[in-house]
Image (cartoon, rainbow, N blue to C red; front, top):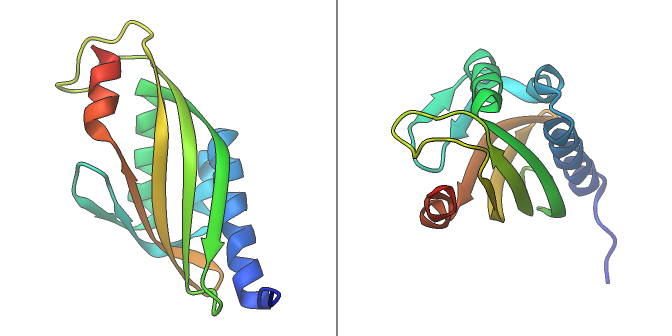
Length: 140
């Protein structure tokens, strides 16, 4: 088996560091790993563009949900320009969010997937996907 390239390894480490900051609820630190014009594709929502809106999303989301990530598996392309991650989310629904069911501390969990574009050792695209129907069922 061939060893990973330096770019591949560097991108894997960037993604690992990104998730470490998310797990530690270090929103500002996580936002420093993304480009000024990051494309953030939400599972059930619009594309958000820019570091400041990304940081705002992280901070705002934390008002409604407390999550931790485990079982993190990361892959990166040999040239380091693309990456993906599969991970398991354990969460608690803290505060009613929009039209979702009323919050009373419900617990939820499930596998998630994310795709990354990486340029100049910064995340330039972060697309995050999960089973939204399963999530809703766990909140009911």
